[in-house]
Image (cartoon, rainbow, N blue to C red):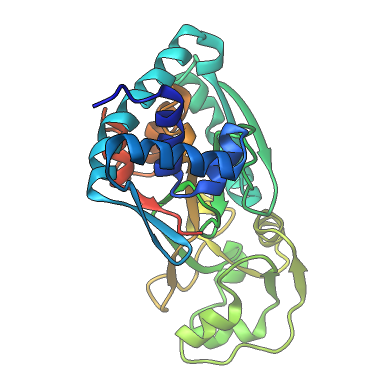
Length: 311
């Protein structure tokens, strides 16, 4: 067999990893036609097809899978080696996080994160929308809700329990689910689980009117702490308030609370081998008591165990 061109192998690795000719073209800063040409050239040299198309979805053939298991590992090792040669780059972690998770869960743990991983340089940003990765501008997103897009590794960050929360003073007068109808209910507009969902799970129709509406969860939590009413929020986001006694869950064990996958760790496939990414993923999943999908030294095998976002 002829020696396979490195440029063609690089193009093949990008297509196979991202499961997309278009995303590979953007990543490599070449045209889509150049990607197609490189793949055809590689297939001609090998004498076998590497990809199969099923509508808009592409899949590796058995030959493609065999080649990718070797080529993917080689390029992962190369990327990791280049990062190790540039210590500062490998220590930089560009992190985007949903506002509620950032304000209520992550920020209070930054001191511990800095102690556990003192070599990491963290750059944290936040907005209500899942991050749209453009090229190589961000390493990780902690999104609220499942992400959309191609070439993304999506890791659900465990089940969250959503229940009514209020001050101990208000809680002292709440014994039944129906008692909530006598109190001001606080809405978080962007939350995926709303009061209507919670009341329906408990066999009641919620009131048509709310007294307070806030855009973000951390605002609703603050309002509840200040006694404005009863908020419906994730127990994950109120760990500090529950521990300090500022908030309590008056109906816990007396009602049917809702559990759902609220937050997801999202990593571009091209970033999964970066040392800073792997370190943060290990730290985050350990904090949440979850298995770390990137703990396998073989990045290609680890990636195969993750949920690939279909876009």
